[in-house]
Length: 343
Image (cartoon, rainbow, N blue to C red; front, side):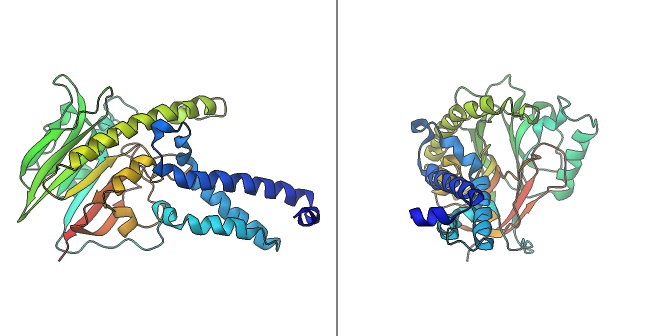
């Protein structure tokens, strides 16, 4: 090993040390989705897993070009991470929805621009027009504003759920099909929440969840070299709160008498403990099943973040997944999936 080290140039030695550091952290990151954040302060490293995976691939390319066998180290890490790669990027083309299907959309509407985060005063009307035009059979809306309760006459069945009677911000589930039961999961000590609705579609009944997990509370304007340390220190507490919330959800879903479909703004990546605990239920991620590209759902200028999801019980087959990434109506992009009952 010493003789091999001596054969390396100074640049190669620096690259190798960097490669080793990234590799160790990446291997660590692969384990974090299975570690409860409340027991491990650095669980928030999962936010950077995609970046580490890309860096690892760059190191593979560097060593191959330089004809050094060190590429084997990063290649092994790449193989270990293949199951995670599908959570980040899909190379298959999106499938078109069949004629007979159930369409479900999830959309964080950011209060219909009520607080003027965007100077475009017509944004609220654009959102409603977009929803009317797309008209999914079932629609889950996060960050719903109470003044819009009457803005959707084109849906026959509607549930607007707020944690407290005086709240103006909540969530909504709108449907073309009858809603026979609905309710709130009542996440404690936060403005975020989860809601559900039991919907009868022909001979089937399904339970649709709309989940809005704890936010990182990071604005684009905060992201700078000076603020990076403070931002990173915020994350462990948010991850721990999300853990408590996903445990509440799982306990509630365990009691569901119907197949479930989970929609929502998870405020975390598909490499997180939060996502892993939901997918451990055997749910199928619409992006992994029928998506393409990076599937980014959040308007973040530096990296493709997928933090909005639709996951379905295997009772259903997911036939298509679409991200409306060219609709700047919110800081989140709407996503829609098509489902059919498995035969």
